Length: 398
Image 1: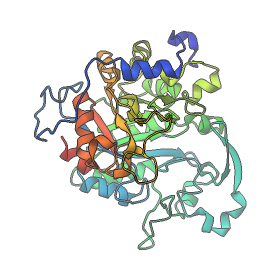
Image 2 (image 1 turned 120 degrees about the vertical axis):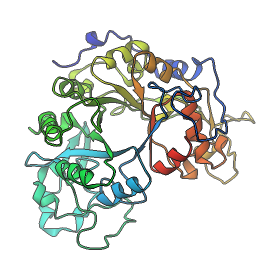
Image 3 (image 1 turned 135 degrees about the vertical axis):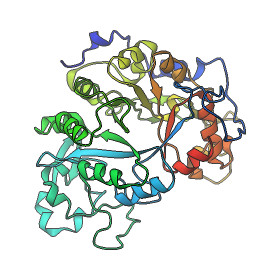
């Protein structure tokens, strides 16, 4: 059954209301404490849902390797990530493939393959008109003649087998060959888009999980998605841990979360005409609804603690705090933590925010270029794990 507005029983709230709920609602302001990195499970300094230290989840691209490549996964293993993110889309012949988007134009070398030039086309990808090449127009065998690359083009292959595209089955096989079995954090991309093409993801994913022996809540696998009905369908078919992603469109200069299509609500809600937004989903009522089909949430990190520019001279413009002539996250200051983690834990949901990095341009001025201080701040709030491009740094900060 499609999700309905009535099923959620949530009132619609403005994004400014979300700001108040997420930023001003917490009575305790968490400082950037030093920490000693040697906390034991149950230490109140890290109030996670299970009382254990927060986990590190490697993003799909680690060490400047192309996202979803075995080279990136190997880097994540070297950095001792607890789980490794793997994006999933569908091929033309119904195979789950490790790719970061159905649109493969900028994440593979498809543009250099003249034999596929006639397959360039325009499709609606979650209502966004997109021109390029799409995984759903290629069989797995065809996709595996391509090579992954960074969208910036900074990565280059070192031999004929570098940066090969992997099926999900191949990723599971790779994980089993490692001396330490890594957890896999699967991200199903655009489920409704694939269903409209006659390529539903759910049964294929469940079959792959069963084939790999991952069928329980203790299996080293988690699945996250921004779409609700997709997760509900999976919940009826598997007991592996499911995670609701919570997105946003951006931040205003003053730290207010912005919600606009296609990142204002789960896309299946848009298709169903359901008015419920991500802002509604992070209320106490929304979290209670999420608990009926998921084990946790994965919000964009400003939902947990946002950051604002300052305007000390009251000219109505953000201040360039570091006087480098441009405005970026380094000119923002961290705001008061929201109640999201506390409320999610009260609903028995874990919280895995994204995305963290040691790139200094992504760090607010509070942290003075030291990524460990950002991790420690979010750990003190009680997040249960973080998605990071630098999982070794996330581990070191624990």
